[in-house]
Every structure is written in structure tokens, then in C-alpha cells.
Length: 115
Image (cartoon, rainbow, N blue to C red; front, side, top):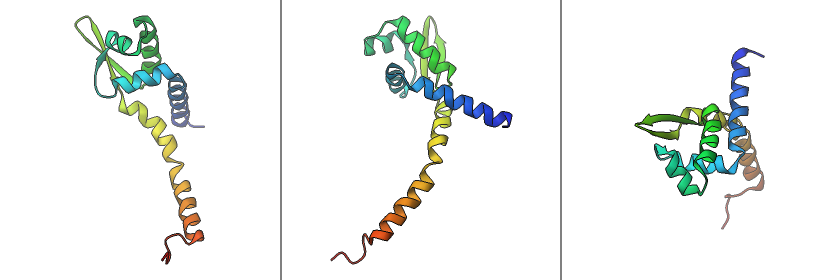
């Protein structure tokens, strides 16, 4: 296995691990529209800032969010590049599924002279 393939596999593992937790998915949904401070995320989700900071660390290490500072506040936003790893994994399934669907529809005669 090449080093590049190994790195992609590790990135995918980290992303899926990070996304396996419901709180982290909720945090990701909140920061997808732009930079949000930890306190605001915590308040909106009803979690402590300490818990949110822990989850953000996992998301950051998986490459799914980025953090910046604005004065004393830590702001977080989605890293689209980090999500691309998971998207690429699932994109590989679509051509096969679409071919099967097309064959099933054609085999059933759907849409041919229905009237």
C-alpha cells in the first residue's frame, strides 16, 4: 500500500470516528454556515464549553473544522476539504448503484407505453 493511499485511509478513519458521535455531528451542523465561538455552540447545544471544546478538538484533528482566534474568542468553521475525504469515499458507490437502477428500470419496462 502506497503512503498516499495509507494517508487517505487514515484520514477517512479519523473523519468517520469524529462523525460517529451525535454531539460532533450537531456541532458540525452549527458551524457549517460560518465561524462560531465555542460559547455560542455550547449554549445552543446545551453542553458545557469544556465538552464542546473536547468535541471540537476531535473534529479539528480529523480535519473537519478549522479554528481561528478573534481576540479572546476561539471561532470554528467547517473545513470543506476535510469533508471531501468522506464524500470521495461515497462517490465511488454511485456509478455502480446508478447502473443497477438503470438496469432495473429498463428490465421492468418502466416508462414504456404506460397508457
